[in-house]
Image (cartoon, rainbow, N blue to C red; front, top):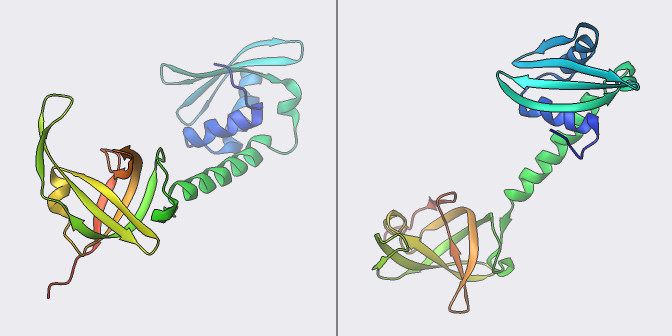
Length: 205
């Protein structure tokens, strides 16, 4: 397995994926160079070949090959663990990426083709459910809800159990929705990977 990342970046990613301490992992690489093999948590590290001041390592997780890569000998001679520094940088980037995914949009900013949309809005209207045949040949109930926030309105397509979940006046939270077009009109869909929940139910009068 080859990586386009720099060695320290790639190894940092492995420590995150397999939840191993970067200092223990770095020490295991050094040990494998000297003793041919070493263990780090559930990972097995094997020194396969040394040539031209480079070392080929093989990493296994049980019987599965995780990675095979080349490291210069000088990488293992560094006083400071280069994997740890890159692990911190990778985790910081990951946190920023997760924050972006979890960002809540306003309806005025929604565009056709957008995915992973999070939104908080109020149910203004809910149409009468109708029965349709899906592309898989199954019958399903579908209805359209009109949802709004301070910036605009958009139709929300509701399927089956989603229809009975909401009522006019409810404030709903939507996660991981996508924006599509139906008859040249924006429409929001919450698929199997999305979440639709009532944040505040309508107050009965």
